[in-house]
Each structure stands twice: as C-alpha cells, then as structure tokens.
Image (cartoon, rainbow, N blue to C red; front, top):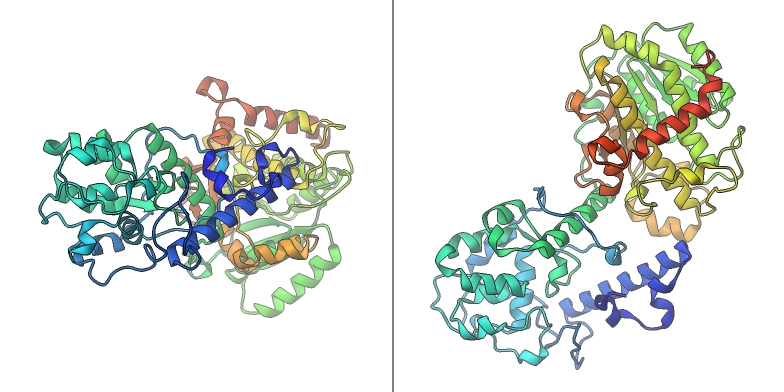
Amino acid sequence: MDSTWKPYLKSPEDNWTEITDPAERKRAQNRLSQRARRMALDYVTGSSLSGRKSTEDGVAGSANECSSLSANTGSDLCVFANSSSSNIFQGGLSDPTTDTQYIIMQSSSTWSAFICIANILNLACLQHDVPCVGISIPAAGFNILAPIESLPSALAPTLQQQLVPHKPYVDMVPWPLVRDRILKSTTAINEEEFVNDMAGLKAWASTPWNPMAWEVGPTFARKWWFLIDDGIINTTNFWRSQRGLWMQFFPGKATFTENNIASLIGKVFIVTGGNAGIGLELVKVLYSKGGTVYMAGRSTTSITTEITAIKSAYQESRGQLKGLNIDLSDLTTIQLCVSAFLTQESRLDVLWNNAGVSRATGTTVQGYEPQMGTNCVGPHLLTKLLLPILIRTANISPPASVRIIWTSSGIIDITNIPGGLSLTDLVPGNFPTDIPTVYSSSKAGNWLLASEFHKRLTKFGIVSVTQSPGTLKTKGWDKVSRLECATMWPFMHEPIMGAYTELWCGLSEDVRLEDGGKYAIPWGRWHPSPRKDILESLKSRDEGGTGLAAEFYDWCEQQTKQYTGNGD
C-alpha cells in the first residue's frame, strides 16, 4: 500500500490491497478516504489536533495553523480567490493511480491552500504583517520559522532554499523540485507573472501540504513548463479524471432545456423506456413541443396510462403520442416493434436508446447476462433494424440532425474492468456475479456501440453518441439497500434533469457531426477526461487502439443476425 494511506490505518482490515472481493475492497477504500478527510478537516479547522505529534507523513504544528485566513494577509492574496478549474490541461501523460480512486474530493480555494501552507511553515511574513505572496518585500533569505523536523517532508526546505535568498512565495510552492528549479532559474522568471499564474493551481482533498493534492492549470503548464516534471503532470491528469466524475455528481445548472427547443412539428422520435423515469420526462418535453413521439416499453397498460395523462396535461400540443410494445430482453419482440413503427411512419429523426436495467438477475429470454442482453444486445438489434429509415431521413435533413442516442452511466468512471468490458465474460457460464461490474460493463458497451455505429453512419450525416443522464431519483434505486440510497441521496436529482442531458444530445445544435462517438455527461456537455483505456478500446488496432469496440460490435451482430428478418 502507498505510504500516503498508512497514517489512516487502524487495523489489518483497512489494508484494501490485500482484499480480493470488489465490494469489500471498495468499502475499505471508502473507510480510509473518509478517515483521511476527517483528519484533514480536523487539522484545517484546528478541532482535534491539540498536542498531536508529527509523523513522517503527517502534518505538524499548532492546532490553529490552518484554522483561518488572517485579516492581515494583504490584498495580494485576492488574486487567488478567483482561481478556476474550468480550463483543462491537454498535454502530458495520463496515468492516474488507483490508490486514490475512492478519495472524497474536497476542493480548497487556491488562496486558502497557500495560506494553510504559510501557517504550517510559520513564514516570517506572517509575523511582520506583510503579504506572503507579495513580491515587493525584500529577499529575506530563510523565511521558515517552524522547526524543520516538524514539517511534512514535501514542505521541508531543500538545500537550495536554505542557501539561496528568496521571497516567501517560493516556500509556499508545494513541490520541492519546483522550488529548487525556481531558485536555479531566477534570471528566467518574472516573479510578478509567476505569482499571478500561481492562481492557475488547484488544491484538492484538503491536504495542500501533499504535492499529490495539486493540479496545475493550462496557463501555468504552458508558461512554466521548464519547472514541472512528469510526476506533476500525472497528478494533474489524475485530478482531471476525478473532476469529470465530480462534475457528474454536481453538474450545476442545466443550460439546454425545453425553453431552448423550437417547434418539433413534423419530427418523429422513438424513446425506449418512455413510459417511466427519465424517458417519461423526455417524452413529455418532445410531445409538448409538437413532436410525433413513440413511447416504447414492455407494459402496454403503463404506456396507455401515461399517454392519457400526458395528453391531458398538454392539451395545446399539436404533436402525436403513440405506443410501441417492446421487450429488449427478448429479441423476438424487436422485429415486431419495428414493423409496427414502419407501418405508421416514413421518417425517424432521433432514436433514444434510453431503456435499460441495472440489477436484473437470471438471464434474458435468449440466455444472455441480463444487463448485457437488455442494455446492449437488444438496443443493437433495434438500432440495426431502424437504420434504413434513419438513413432515408438523413438524406432529406440537415447534416447531424438525425441522431442515435445511447445511454451509459457515470458508474463506468467508478468501477469497470480494463477496456470497459471483457468478451470472455459474455460467454454463458462466464457471466460475472458482481452486479456493479456487469452493469458497468453493459454501460461501457453502450459507449462502444455508439462509437461503432457512428463510424458506419457518419457518411450519411448521422450522429451516434452516448451519454450519462446523471444520478437521478428513479425506480432503478428500488432494489438498492436503504443505506446505499441514503449515501447517494445528496447526489440525486429529479428525472427531468436526466431528460435535459438526453435532450442536449438529441437536439442541441452544439452537437456536431464530428462529435459522433463521444460521451456526454449531465446536463449536456462532453466528458472532460474520459477513461484512457476505454478511448483505446474505441480505436482500431490500425489507429493504435485495442479494437475492442469493433469486436464487441461484431459479437452483437452475430448474436442478433437471426432476428433481423433477412439474415443479414
């Protein structure tokens, strides 16, 4: 186990590196990350560190060192208050460590993180009522007043710091290597610019004394590239990937809603699972705007009930609302569903493959693992059978307006096997028994299929993308334990918010033809840092990837071939 975690171990059961069961392993990791967060928070607030001795990996000093921002820190610190993490550093390596995969992200504003470091170091500037990040104060030589042996190893002054006179902002830089490089490059550094660019750094996890808690911004990386190394870049890319998951839990305000949608009269849509949850909310919006909407689902009774309710609620709508019977876990029903649709329509503008299952047991009617069969094999067949009408519609429509929207899940950023899925797990007798794993694999499979369909359909001007609608209050949580529901409750949103994600993918003009194959996150934006191993799965071997997406598509083709009606 990484030494970073050792201070938080209380018993051998906490050493998750020795645990093979995925569920137990995750629980141990969560215990450690929560314990680390509580200890860090205690330290920052000064609530429970009185008399605590320092350790090699710990943080020493008085209980109030990081408790608050001094009123005398000066206006120079205000530059840090407006730091932003919205820009994304695109360069460098991407090798995030799994040791901190389950860390509870706690963002520190940049200015408070630096002041925390200044307090730990007990910088001389704090004693003399001057701003520690100011560049106008004379070079003080050695600025650290705290006992060196009490400091975290990363903040302990290097030999260069002890020999070369410098201003205190240098001591606040969390990386020893960068501090030394600054002191060796004084003629190449404009100190005022450097201090301003320090606002482009970002601290995570309430542990600013730990270099692993920092992310560098794009401006800082481009301008001061000669100061950083691959380790800093790797850490930055790790936090970028974590921020992608964080953005899915707390997406902010939806920017594409029913208010952004013009009349949909004349447009035709299919929404699988349209009689409940996210799909139902999506159907309501489409119908209210005058679209012809087909609500596809297993329960004819439920479909009839919801259609009646929607028509009553939107009596002014000029749209049409119809039902289609389909069971994606039974491939024999899909051809009948498509035939029923084709007898009524001559166009199809958007197909939303929205329906899915997350905790099904047993097998599908044809013997597939239920998550993979219902979420991937069934939608693959449905999409394949609808391709002719989708292509005909694309021929008479603006480019990129005809779309296929697949539904993934944020779980693929939390738990998944390398590459997204394993073809050997698809063989009867090899089905994994861990529900989160099989569900995550099926949701990664949706992304692989979205990419492969786009590669085949881009020449027709059709866009195929996948999206994670968000963590939502739907019936999918009915079979989840109360404890797990209580844990996730702060992250849950109303189903209409997930519909906004799907609306953005299906109707927004911001989605272009070249975006095909991408992965969207709530409430309508592209994933800022998709998993590298899945991106490699999307590429063919000729493109330098693994070719897994193409292999999975071919597997789905073989499984559904006999149900296409014409054998091809």
